[in-house]
Image 1 (cartoon, rainbow, N blue to C red):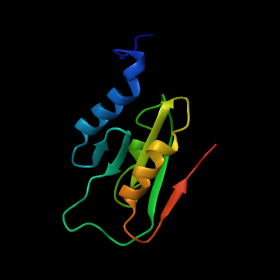
Image 2 (image 1 turned 90 degrees about the vertical axis):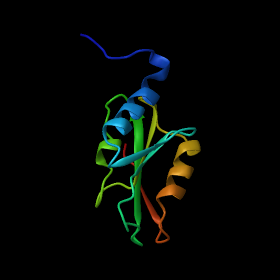
Image 3 (image 1 turned 180 degrees about the vertical axis):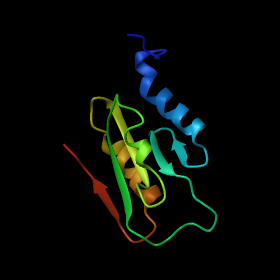
Image 4 (image 1 turned 135 degrees about the horizontal axis):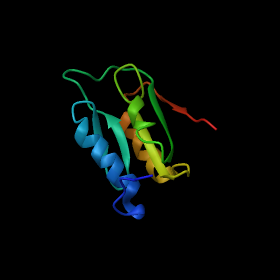
Length: 108
């Protein structure tokens, strides 16, 4: 089986960067810490409960692929098969919050 991986240490960052470049109109990629948010549309900042999710990487674009209007507002990728840490979850939560609160979707 062929894999499209340059360096296993950088696979998550490169995958998310590629997703962001391919979908600039839909998402914004934030680095250090790494998380993805919904790209704002013109005049778009409804006061609604934001939805944030994430999880271990390795099945891209799993979480980032659910970002969009009426779907997730942010996603936080963890290392391969590992949950994301608060280092990424907290800034993603703050970025997604429009003032009506944030619901974290945590699955197991």
